[in-house]
Length: 418
Image (cartoon, rainbow, N blue to C red; front, side, top):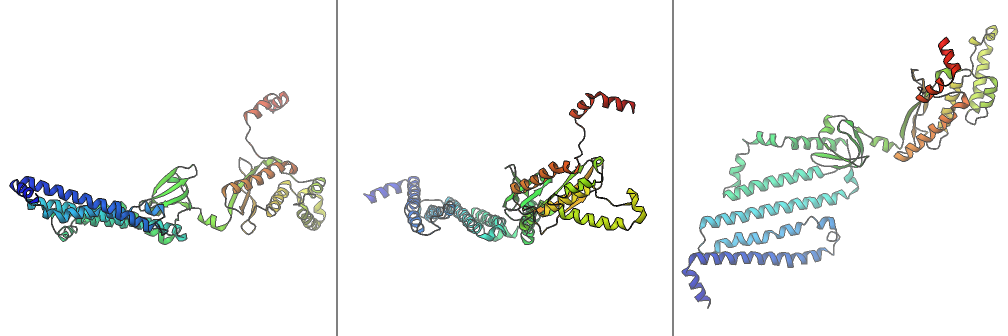
């Protein structure tokens, strides 16, 4: 029966060749079924006994599944020569296509293996300091470039050396095409070697509207999750060529700076009377200051002799100086401030907005919410305490102030007469 069937096919060469192609296709499908349905299941079953086999992030890369795609292509490449009546040129084309597919599949499997390596590396504690994703991407590009050269040489049925010999003349074109990639690679190496940016750093780059935490450092871009939960993609070379602010130093120091001024109304600045000094002396943060100040001024004014009878010749305690001393003592006793960092209270140059009394200190935490709470509590207290020193914050008149002024005829008449 078999001999009769073969004799029948031999009488029709085209049908014989078609039958051979069908058998080859069925053999490829059978090989694909055996490898994917049986062999891979066995491999995954044994890998399931290991921690890597139970890792979804690693299994998702599908390295074994990609390698399994080689088997049907290998069957086609090896069996096409056995098909009876197959033209040599057609057999060569099919074999070359199958071989090129094998090369492509191997390249994809290697790229997936690199993804596995990157996944495992990112779980290490030092991965945040030295990310390798950019290098992984460079390796992938190299793999795909080599695969493309081999595939093209296979499809053309020529030696890869012939194609590689022409790359020297194409170097300028390649550099032009991969200019951004090369610049990004150099920038990534500079950033990694100088430790300029790490994953998790808070960076601020106003020119590109980026202000938030770095969540990824890749070959071409650095992704930043901004505080409004938007994501900015910054070209990595911009971090080398343009200025940006990295808040890592502040976070590692353990203290965040408060630098804010209270603008005092200069018309309220005056000397304090004896009864006011006595009253303020009962403030816990002013007891030692006022006692020390009284002794200092008593000694100073005692040396003036007869000139001490004129008030302008004597030194006296002012309400703004006393308030400044109170603020300094209050900050040095505050439990939310870092007492081993710079802490000062100073007057800045007066201007049209009043006399700036600047507070310069550091909180003992870098957490944003805690920092804002401590800063607000300090200024809430100081602003509310200003009337105790007969001081007031300077504020431009509002519509309500002007309306109140207009409703008081005696004030309007006094201004008109003046």
